[in-house]
Structure formats: C-alpha cells, structure tokens
Image (cartoon, rainbow, N blue to C red):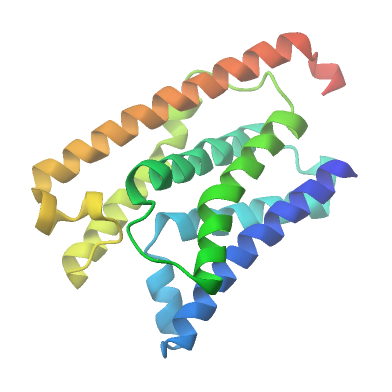
Length: 205
C-alpha cells in the first residue's frame, strides 16, 4: 500500500510540474498545441512525462507491475536531470510563481523521489553491468532529436547543445562528457543494487 501511495505521489508531482509549465506558456498567449510542441523539446519535460506514466502504472497495478530494470533506468535518467540542472542550468533564468514551482518539482524534487522509490520499493538483484548502456540510448536519442529541432528551428533547448554558440565539436564534446558521467553513475546504481540484493534476499523483495 505504501509503495502504491508513494508511486501515486510521484506521478502527481510529475503531472503538476508539467502542468505548471503548460499553464505558464498558455497564459503567455501560446495555443495548447503550440505550448505542447515547445515543451516536448525539453529532456526534463519528456522524462517527467515518462515518469508520470510509469508511476501511474505502479500506483494502479501494484505488484503486478514488476519492472525493476525500468524503474532503475528511470531513477538513473532522473538523476541525470537533477545533476545537469544543478551544474549547468540553475540560475540561468529568473523564475517566479508557477514557473518556479514547476522548476522545483521537475528538476529537484522528482529526481530525489524517483531515486528513493527505487531504493526503498524496487526489487533488487536484477540489474547487470550492461543496463546503463541500454538506459543511455534514451538520452542519446533525445540528443539527436534536440539537435535536429535546433537546426530546423534555429533555437536549441539547452545552451550546452547550442551549435551556434559551441560549434559541432563543442556540442559533441559536451555530449560525450555527459554520456560518460551518466554511464559511470548508472554503474554505481548497479553496484548498489547488487549490494542490497545480498542483504535483502530476492524472496523477501
């Protein structure tokens, strides 16, 4: 019961964060479709959207939704969201009202909640050293998508992937550093999974 309630809280938090961003754009005069198009250009929004779907499934289905690799992958990717925000994006724009609330939920609170859920409620002992490379396919796919949009629209979602400022070599260098950091951090998550599996046998998970 606690697991499902925690999952519901995460789902609602992700929905609220995305909803605040959508509402802010629409209050600024953008249409619903136009606002959605803007939002799906951002890794943070897409990832929190996936979080909302996954944790809605957990809240509704409970133990019938047993996907430890998926939850671990979501925890790793959400950790990336939090770290990138803290190290590269925080303070770049002045925030107030609903935008500030959305920023807190999407970039700061939700990464912590998802990681805690994985730590406390997800079955351990299922991960392998190959999983981080599989999880990395999602941010790599996003990078290709974001660069294609940036080239087409002349506007990039994040400053560290802005080709007009950094050049292609700079963007690729930034991407490689982030990818290596992501895989290294995700491998630590796999190590923690194995350590906890030894202390918490699978038949008790």
